[in-house]
Amino acid sequence: MNRTGSKRKNTTTGTTNTKRYLAKKRRQQQIVLRVLLCILIIIAVCITVRLLYLQRQRYRERQITQTGDGRIPGPDLDVKLLTVNEYSRPGTALEKVKGVVIHYTANPGTSALANRNYFEGLKDSHLTKASSHFVIGLEGEIVQCIPCSEISYASNQRNQDTISIECCIEDETGRFNQATYQSVLHLTAWLVEHYHLKVPDVIRHYDVTGKLCPKYFVDHPAKWERFLTDVREYLKRYGVYQST
Image 1 (cartoon, helix red, strand yellow):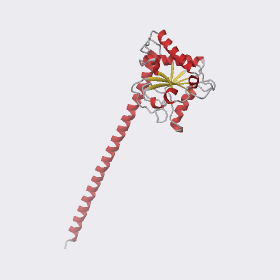
Image 2 (cartoon, helix red, strand yellow; image 1 turned 60 degrees about the vertical axis):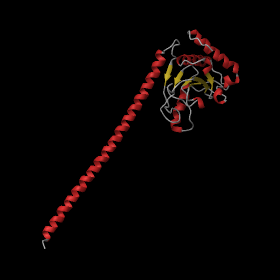
Image 3 (cartoon, rainbow, N blue to C red; image 1 turned 45 degrees about the vertical axis):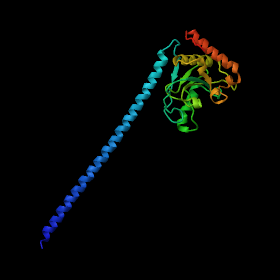
Image 4 (cartoon, rainbow, N blue to C red; image 1 turned 30 degrees about the vertical axis):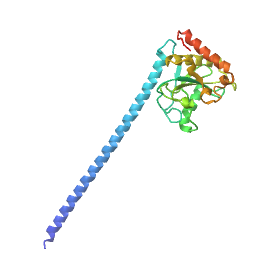
């Protein structure tokens, strides 16, 4: 019996099988690497698209307020957009603006920036879901938290079709001081013109849910009617006439 020949044959067969195994393993590794590379490319593209979208939104909001497209001058905004997150800025598109909702912060003495930062902090604290497109401070400053092309978490079932404005207050009465009042008047009138709304489209949070917000305008309905009259007069001052 030729045992040497048999042994060489077995060795050759073993070597061939090993090569096939290694080649198959390399092909599998290459496939895995290609799949991982494709996944990384997709993730990179998604991140890039999202960043470009957010950049475009910021630019668009600044352009709208700087140049305006109507008779009323755009208000001076401090644009400090919230980070996109599920607790205060979900990034959901606001397809059509049908109203403006007025709120109050309910925490006397705090600034517009402090309230904006509270909304920003919700992405980490997860305490609740809350935000506003704009916050108006005690000195009349207007901080923009969310682009008007996205929803905010402010007005419950009207989040989907309204712009929200939070107003800071000095004391428990909830009354807006003169600087805050003038800024919310300007901003509201500008939004009414910009989105082709009517004055009756300006409402209180109270009108949506019955919540005592904004407190002073709920406690004093005549003052709310006075505010709406002031909005009409502001519009007329710039030649923006309303049928109702």
